[in-house]
Image (cartoon, rainbow, N blue to C red; front, side, top):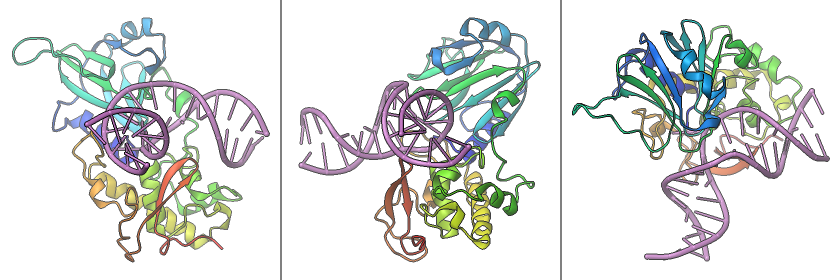
Length: 280
DNA sequence: CACGAGACCTGTTCGC
DNA sequence: TGCGAACAGGTCTCGT
């Protein structure tokens, strides 16, 4: 489900509280519970709860699509992959009875004040790491696209000499961290670049335009509190502003030509055949 | 080393 | 209406 703007929205809710739940940051952990074994990569499930106990959730932040929970001693990293979502709620209902778990809850963080954080994940792709040094997981990531240190020249260097199509390269988290299928299609449409264009064929001007477009669509997404699709509704409304993604057969907002859908790198890919002509 | 295909999962929607 | 196929916001592993 989530790409950079959705993860950013979730992190902000963990810090300040969201529409449906209280903040999690600032609370003291009493333990944890693993409901689907493969969700927790490290440590062993048998050590998880004990190691969490007593640590304060001091800060929540984001790196690429990773949620980073800084504890007193350790760091808890959460990647929601395709269908993960976080929920913060009281363990006890207003009636004084235990609140039942949701159908696809995979892992719980239990705080000492009757609040819990649940990782709900129908497809079971989400992963959690409890580590001393987050860098052992995050070091392979490319630059933060919205960071001021990330420049067009930086992007150009990372694309230099690559013969591969631009779309799968933008999805590669070691090139840039945080783009997924939606925002890649949106950025390429805004930059007027065909998704199959070999990276090496892009001009300096096109790369500058792409750089600007990437930052632009991500900022737009954050301002809309992310996109909400299908049965998962988080309150974001960027789905109402899609220019290309998911709009096969609908008119391009720029020129009116019908948006086409092709497969690139095994991912559904949406583009305007007129605004984004094939490389020749 | 770069790249593409398959695997990991469940749920919803599409097409005949 | 029914039922199998296709599809879904991601990433890892393996083979070429």
